[in-house]
Image (cartoon, rainbow, N blue to C red; front, side, top):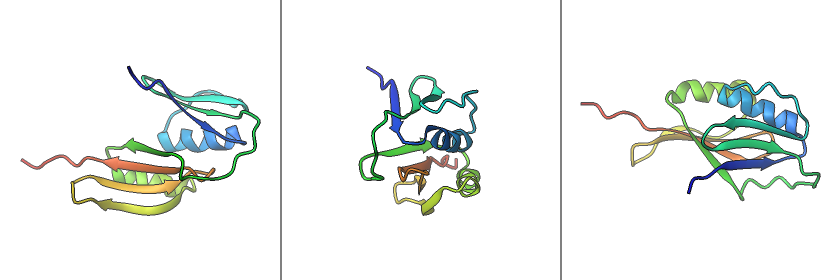
Length: 118
């Protein structure tokens, strides 16, 4: 079994989709205001408006993306207006991660796995 899709529910599909397209450096060719596929690889990321009023509550979901260049990713988040919760920091187990909020207040993580020096 594989995870097929992660869907973020929002009241403003274009705003949230535009943020993720810039964040992930992808283009989907869509300006749809109801539903957009952002990533459509093995696991899809979609943004969808189901017509319900949403409370901003980032405690219900956390998304983590693995990045190769943490400094570049950090600067990209700052450039597109992501609210930094915690800047990049090395963890005792060797991972470098940072956390930030998307425009709807969802909590996101970028993480990188520095290569071991031989």
